[in-house]
Image (cartoon, rainbow, N blue to C red; front, side, top):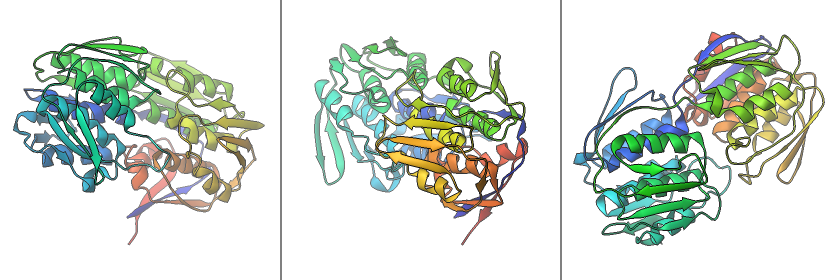
Length: 420
């Protein structure tokens, strides 16, 4: 076990290199199951969820090697176990993404109902219903999803709600189905498009990824591919907020600014000067206190739910009052009580947080409840007087690669302490 300790006060200045996207690399790793040849995945972040995914595929029989630069080579031809057990999937909801590839490639799958962050219900019925439309026989019993299909058939699937993992699972399954599959009301996130590009590199026939309608023409076989994962827009946004909350000047590199319009717009509303290049973004607060912003989370290209907690922290010390409405997950304000321990003035009304900015926060021991909440608490610690401790940092390790090292590079007084 470990905790992160932050001494608030320093104005952050400098440059941060952004890792590959957590929300892109996990489906890409699982998509390699579909191949008949070895795939090599680059720009892989060193995260706990990646480790869990690799362990899961290795347990199913895939041959996997990782070099010193976290490039992962996957040979799926040795995979001979079609079960994803609870002891591995309980920490990671993205493990549901093995369902579509296993079913499409091997005709069967047993996947334990997944766990992960306690931020609200993310029902698997969208995945199950879509696969059933494609001809799968699926039963949910004893905590497992048990699926069988000789060969999936192309189908028209209208998603009841926008679901990133639902879109990804069905898109992967459809690549080896017999006929054409059309997914309507599909998620438009850049990570969905990145997965589609990887599948196309393997030989899949996919059009429309990044739009509301994705069309997949099934093929008999996919090969392998060499592919580099896109940069993590949420990690980049988190470090830009770190610069903004401290009144600093921070540049993030190895990014795709075009995937971050909604985040950058809100940072500009908060008073930041934003400058972008082809693969970098610079934020300059010019020493000023940020201005409070109002925002509502919604599927891409609107403001991402994965940045809500970070902007909640920003509003805590901003000038004015900001109203944040969460529409994606019903239980994603668990960080509010912890922020109040630092002296934040926040009123919760259902799925809306009304935040009146205060001039200062005061350090306190805090406990992370989920991945993005943990990043929010670290951000608040950057401006709290005294030493803030954040416990349960295994949450943050699921989605941020060496966050204390990266923040330390730009001036934060932050360290990790092992506890017994």
